[in-house]
Image 1 (cartoon, rainbow, N blue to C red):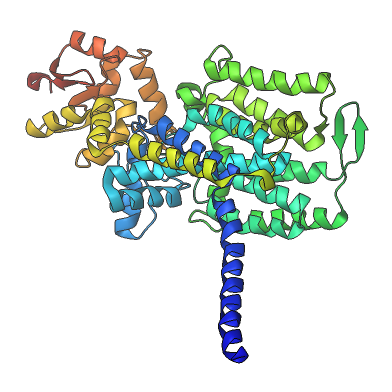
Image 2: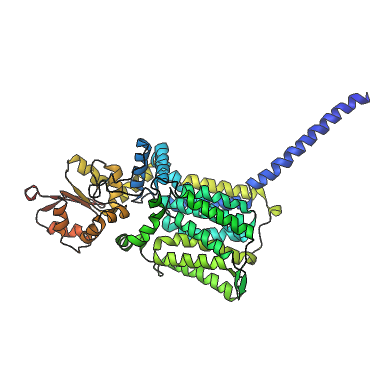
Length: 510
């Protein structure tokens, strides 16, 4: 009888132990999934979607998309221009081909909604990766959220469906890997070569990544303290492993379709494309009176105020990277994105002691789960519909003008507005463009300078029109030439809408 009674008790005890073990596994797992840092990441995702939902309008997106389609359908990476008649067959460096392929893959999968999903995902990934970097670097998951907002403020200048978004995400990942190798295990450094092998084929910011790695390695050779400036010498093993990793990363850059030309492409842009840098708005110097310029000054003031009050120190590598970010942002407005990525972890480390740190033991899963659910609902609500995306395309591009050109059979060489070239490459491939957002190509071909002089009324308008035998012009109503062409002999306006105007050469004047 006692044996009969003991057997069920033993079974119950085993079940109880199994249930306890299950709870012992599931409980910590749920606490990790619904942790405070994860909830903050959900908020950043919602912020990203709310920010980019109305930004389906970058003019360069279209030629990136068309190039990706070309690679997808031909299984070949183009090394010559195939979209214009002014630079036709001219050599180019396909330095963003892998990003362009990813852009087209998103479109092939889901159309415009697929593109927007990729856009939202990359924007959210930049903010979340920035938060992870600041959290690791500062050791304070709460202050790190402020760092992610610093990244956000400056990243908004580059939130568009273009390869640089992926390039800057890789820059953040490089900073994470270097920090892990520096603070935990130097073997993390050896994740850098495969990262650079991908990066070289996505965006030219890989060059900045090499410079940053070199700066950090250089700083690891010094050991001193001068006032609030501190340098800590790395162990010989860590220095050797980072040096070897950077050497392998440099070798990995040759894994691209153009070889050394692609490696040197960023240098060529900075040193040998003066017209591009002088005429394209995003390459202009940062205006300190702008909203981002004011934020730039605020971040710098916060860093130097903390130093002046002796609330924190500044490491040698941080000083050098901060100086690099200041120079880049001051020289080119678009580079304030990079400044945010470099400055955010420095600022959060300096502020880490000013706010109590996150304590996982005191975390509560249910409030975090509610916050995550609200973030998810916000993302779903804010994601634009197909109709909204179509409206954004029509609002920013010459959609109806393209319909007019086709319905009225306008033929012959076309001179188009610079900002419309990308859309025309995608929407009207049967008409090669005069120019588009590939300013590097057109500067190499000698076209960019001629177009810039023509569009800004610095040359005889007829000279360019006659040289290329232009038969019709598709321009923005705000273009200076849109006011001049009606005054020229032999030209007439044949179409106009809020987005674009078309001028056609009068048949007798042809």
